[in-house]
Image (cartoon, rainbow, N blue to C red; front, side):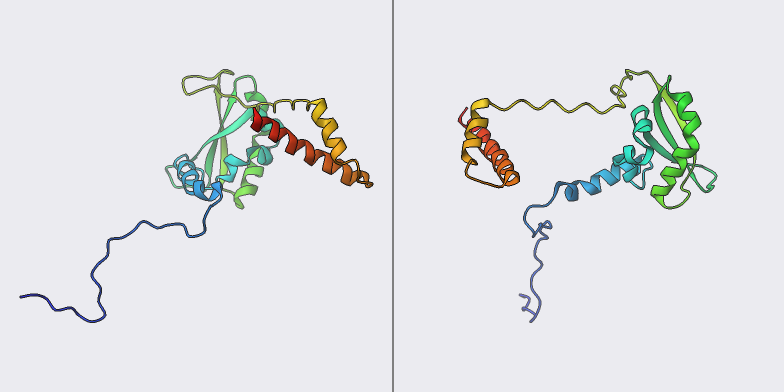
Length: 185
């Protein structure tokens, strides 16, 4: 005997994956959850400690050390241990700065989350997982623009009397003309 349709009930539809309804999304919004997962696996509940380390610790400290792990004690005491990676030559310098670093890190957390800082030393060139490089690579030097392109951009903006506006238009013209030159190559 066939089942009669009950009014107001629809047959079950297969679940569709959630779709974004806003079009393009910023990359950070797509990666935030994954970055948080990886950070939490290493004990970083606040990922700002990793992403803004130079601002938190200061440029001199960030140049010689980086955060590796936050570990919580087994006995359940308050406070965690922040593990910093540094080279052997810089370890004594960091040892003297541990209290200042701890205060600055706790300022990010908003409470005394870190009670201890432990230093881990490595060779300046690193080991198996890659090289421990603390200094950020320098930005490549900008190439000098083509003199013919600069002259053509100056000719394009020559009729403008305001010097600031003329300089801005020359810069814009250089960018547009250099992109056209690259596209033609």
